[in-house]
Length: 304
Length: 306
Image (cartoon, rainbow over all chains, first blue to last red; front, side, top):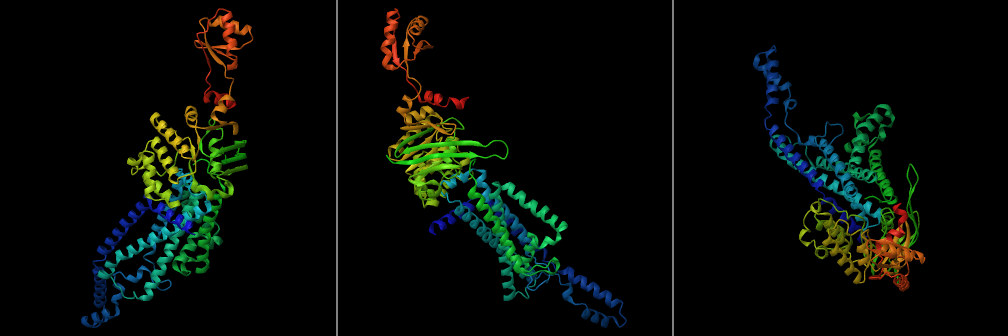
């Protein structure tokens, strides 16, 4: 057990020592700062919504039959100010209830997933590219143990780094919400929903890293792994969606969408529950990783 | 003397999707005794590196058995790997890490810390460049870094695949000294090389591989003696006349520069002087022909060179 932990620790260090990891983190940090600043300054002026409401109230009053003052008061009472309130709401980051609109935080996960896929593939591919896998195996010849430690390190690091970056993103956006937005509704229940959503997002990020690492182990090449992954997502899944729609419940994207939501969103159009999605995704990623371990164990390391 | 490496009927065949399969190692038998420096020779493609990869578990043999430090490699390699330092072909390290960082990452796998890493770098003469990126190293420096990596484990057995590859003459001499020192410390150094003069100067025992088979093995002196017929070198003023005299006596001889190479056992050298003297051809120099490992090697691996 101590050996395994030492190996895991070494693999974590090895991953963190890679320049690519920090380049990706730096890109993410730049994105977080930019998003936070843009959000803050773009929400400073909420007069547009108020002006629009006032214009509509005046139009309403002009065509009224009663005297002008009464008409204006009646119109003002009828035209709710909430409908024209363009201020941002903190709860929109991750709406607590089902089908309550877009999750504003969700798009950030796409960037994290892409970063994790690239990072995970590189963590394994670099050893093949530079021939260091041979060197490594002359120090730790237990291939199953080595690959398992590497995959575990890749998954957990992607999860941890992704979570840290997303917390920074939320933290960076908070000043805009507190200064120019509405924090009403952001109670303990909402915080729990947000935390659960963020954990689910990071599980997806970790699984993306694991898939990248597994494909890279199988192909012994980072670029091939990334090419295969993107080709599958862009071509493979769309092909299935178009030509074999009954297979949609088994597609990665559909399962990820359901898993992310925490329930089956009304707009997805397939009858697949959260539980099934939550089992399908790890089955794919862990299954592929297990296949990569088996192949890695059996294949000769003759060239690099 | 206990064997630290024992290879029995080892065979490695690479199957190909198209065309015939390639036999890299063909029923190889090899025994490397404990202590000293053991040279592993063979032309390119003779199976040296494949044998080393089999020993280190990088390649799975098609059949046969390999034992190292008393354990079967197929099952017990993890038990002895902490006592085996190795370089396979060009030492591979991450180019964007410093040499020191590369070694630290490897060392941590066996609980080896910075002090040992610095000592290993010092021993191979890389202490001053240890913190530089590996991509700035010359090939020779990379070889030294690989050697430093092998020394980190304080190994009982070192397996070095072409350790002098890419080194300049000064570097080769330095590595030769280091290898001899390591052998003299009681470690077993198993070194493959194509630099035959180096092997002859460095090794106590050798094995020569040809087409995946061991064609000679033993102490360097024994292998040299078992090589081509030794013969004697004779210097005479009139080479043509001398060749006629020797030929008439049934002794094969050839002209080699300004000397004659006479194909007789060195104990029969007196017969040569007698024959030539009786013909009035006076021998100004007569010496046994020195056979180098290169001669033996080329003789034994003649098939490989076509």
